[in-house]
Length: 182
Image 1: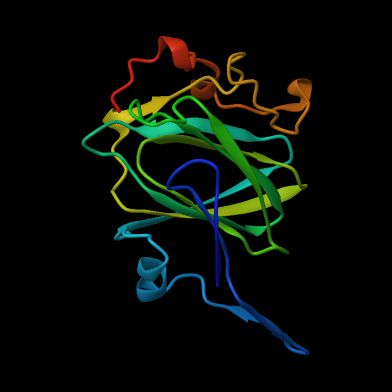
Image 2: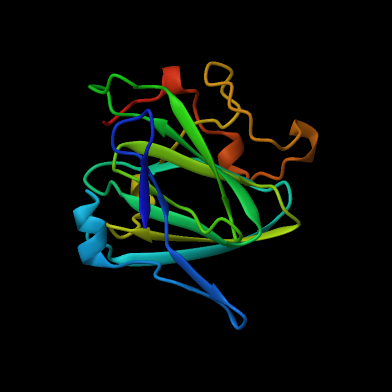
């Protein structure tokens, strides 16, 4: 596997080694030893999967301490733009965002350490998105940032009039108004 460092400390893009032949392909989606050697120390305890249609934008979500989560995410069907925002107050990249396209063709994974808000937009007709978390989900610890925050100016690659959002995601605070627990 190839590990690609991003401009934001701790964020990693992983390109697994794909073995393809006339039957199809095979890849290792997770190997604790290899991932630890790559600097990913998370011990994953929960796996999640979502299925969404074109235009769905989910995010920007996080879990407040003590229930923060690191995530290892990928898109197993379709195509998504995966986006994170650095919420770590002591970070040189606080308030900056980074995006990576995850597709069923590129097999990329994205490792997101604790202290980030996370979301994605669906760019294909349908997408199946999976993620491993290193802490269990706690609804009382839910937090979020408005995905259309003008100070962030994230290009979700879905026209605003075609975006499909949950009621909750339409009412998150702006980053500047966030009671930031990180």
